[in-house]
Image 1 (cartoon, rainbow, N blue to C red):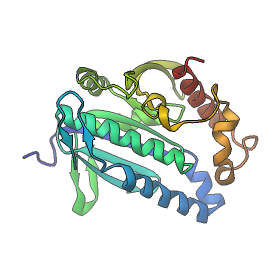
Image 2: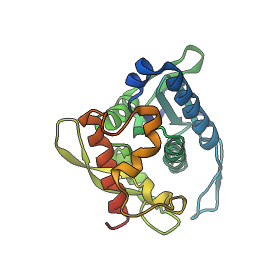
Image 3: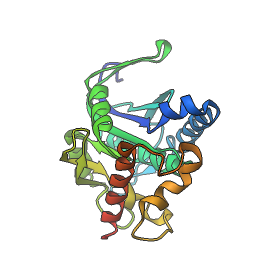
Image 4: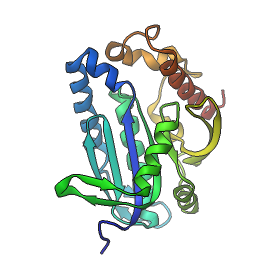
Length: 239
């Protein structure tokens, strides 16, 4: 049986704009936290069927929400654990978008220790997942090399036979971009999108304006993150 300090796959997600929203409109901020919890509860415990082995994967992932941060981690360090964490956290990410919650996150593999009774979580994998997500200037999911290698070895493909993990020049806080592995949520949930292509930044942000304010009122740095997200989305549709 795995113990609390084994290697495993770890995801760290946080909500964009939560600090500003909390100060400006505490009631709306609370509602968004409730919506994040709802998205987690609706998606993180879905069953997954491996197309290559026909295995049914259930109850593979633990999670914890604190304020606008969600930590999710696998119970073990196997291919199934990697598959479950990638797919289920992507489900949470897209469901959160449905509830107008902008998330960014990272997934990493390595040592991770936890104690649910004391709400303690630590380890290099958590630090790496936090850094991958926090430095990315967009809404999306960045994946470390080890997790990407395992996902590609399965192989992990969308319903349209497209790669779920792809290379992308992820924009960072210092103004440069770096080629990293990312989850291609635009193709994993292609069938759930029925809007125009190419997608405009204004159309993407419009459902969130009632909560986070008008597009024109957003700081330039925040606008930049939405613009980068839409650029990624449109690229997956070939535009």
